Length: 306
Ligand SMILES: C[S@@+](CC[C@H](N)C(=O)[O-])C[C@H]1O[C@@H](n2cnc3c(N)ncnc32)[C@H](O)[C@@H]1O
Image (cartoon, rainbow, N blue to C red; front, side, top):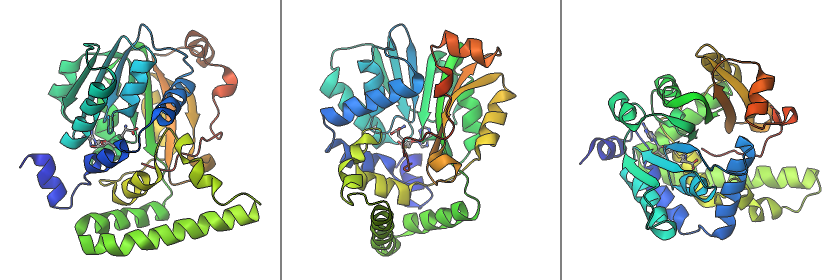
């Protein structure tokens, strides 16, 4: 049994890869296009031609696939969970079986020697990963070192909701502890989720089914794997937006785009795009073809999952 499996069987870590395998059964062209669209939109790039792309914690492999389809010169994916690595390899096999532009490995973002062997990249992407490592601040530091000067870092990190985040952490600990807790927690959560959604829809005069029908618009994701991912996702850490931006500012990064979960009040991921290197935000935006209006800290594509 490898270290990862031991951590999962001791309840110290959620087995994300098993859940991603489930997700791959629902993957279709619509979801892939949505993943591509959301990636290009956040990066403000219509193409990744000429860019190298590192996908840290690739999960299903969907965003590595999106980077390939956006024309990246080279994509490097890795994940700590062997089953996530298997999913990413499956997507390569399905969509780019012959290419040598896409490399997939098993490894941890906390392993400095593994990381330094990978070299540096134009774009480092780590969405919903670093807060699941158990050492989020070390992981944030490690990804920063993989970026070329002038390159881009795209990270998504759970928003800190104070007491509510501490409650969620307890839920996740219990969920990973035993099947009995999972059987108890899952229907309770589903009932609350449906009731909450219904109440919001009734108040807003919205079709109560449309939130479920439109679910693939959330980065191409699927509802049930996202529910499991949210309840199970452990280790679990959170950060306030100012903590993340301050952390990278002192390391010479400039924030050029961000979206906050429900305007900074949600429990989901805040997304941040930084450029490595000092310079005026204006000139950096221009060099990365980012319009000033797009630096919108409250226009949230409602990303509420891990
Ligand atoms: C919620 S998933 C996100 C997957 C993908 N980035 C996405 O946007 O859909 C988190 C992933 O991080 C991986 N992960 C957790 N700890 C890691 C580590 N130390 N190094 C690399 N990957 C890690 C998990 O195995 C899982 O596949």
